[in-house]
Length: 139
Image (cartoon, rainbow, N blue to C red):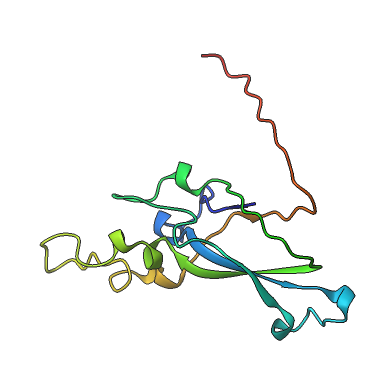
């Protein structure tokens, strides 16, 4: 399970820096691998290009909350590799967005956020996990 929402109070955060696409690499030290060396990891999973989709005008929190994928592998160590954030992976945010030549609105060339990524948490389970959400909110 992985989630990409932003946290309150961050001054370097933008919804466009939230994770969009990722890959998981695994290493199994019980098989003699040295998991302290990145070369010991092998690709176990590549997410869809829109694993955390964002739509115009900007990515919204419900699109960035926890999601899950099934990966069949045995590992002692996991490495998360970012493939794209919302800016670099969202084609709807690329290119000129308005007719103002004095304001570059292209997400990848007009923003310093192209190389910044935020992910909230990564949870790995040995077996299938089941979660029941209870709400005590009154209507």
